[in-house]
Length: 321
Image (tube, rainbow, N blue to C red; front, side):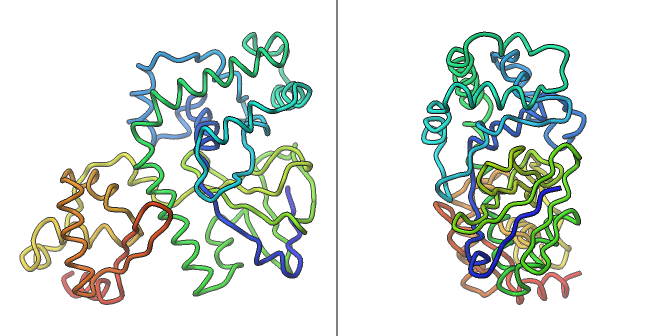
C-alpha cells in the first residue's frame, strides 16, 4: 500500500502527463504475460514478427510484472518526447541501475543473463533494445495510442471540475481513495508499502494502456507518481463501425450517426478515422458540421483536438433509440 499526503495547497499540484517511455516500459508486461492483456492481442501478433532483443526486454520485468524505477521516471512535461526521456535514463548512475534491476529480480534464483556485466554496458544494451522496440512496435501506432491517453485526461479533468478531486480518484479504481487529503493506493503486491508527502513536489498522474491496476514506483525515494489504466482501451485496436439507431442513420447519414454514437467518450479525429475506416479529412468535415449544429463539444489537448457528444447530442441519441 502506498499513501501520498496531499496537504493544503498541494492538492492544486496534482498534474497529468503522458509519457512515451512509460508506455514503452509498461508494455513489457504484455510481452511477458499476453494472457493478462487480451485487448492488446491484435497488436501483440504484430510484435511477434518484429526483430527485437527480446532477451533484454523481457529481463526488464518479473513474474509480478514490476519494472525498474529508473525506466519509469516522472514525466517532466505533460507531453514528453521519447528521446528526451531516454536521455534522462542514459544519465542514470551505474549504482542506481544495478540497484533498481536487483529490486525487480530480488526473489529470482539468478539474475537474467541479459543483465550480467557492468551496469554501463547493461544500460547501453537496454537503451538500444528499447529504441528498436519503439521504432518497430510503437511509432506506427503512437498517434492513435496518444489520442486514447489524451481523451482519458480530458475526461478526468471534466470530472474534477464537475464532481471534485475525490470523485475523480474514485473513478480511476476502487483501489484508489482520497480522504482528508491522504491519497491511499492499494497495490496488488504487499511487497511495496510506504508513506510520503508530496509537499513541494506534487503528484503526477500518468494514464497508461498497459496496466490493469494503479501502480507507483517501488521505492519511496522516487517522486510521487501514480500510473493508472486509461479509459477507452477497448476502442484502441478495433475498426468496427458502431451501429447507430436506424432513425438516426436515416436522418444524418451513416458516418455522422456513427461518429455521434462513438463520441460518448472523448476522441480525436485521427482515432475516429481509424475506427471508422475513412480519411481524417472526411471525419474533420463531419465533426465541424456536427459541432456547429451543437451536437458536439471540442477541447484542445496538446497537439490534438478532442471531441465529445454535447448534452444536445446525448438527447438526440436517446430520442433516436
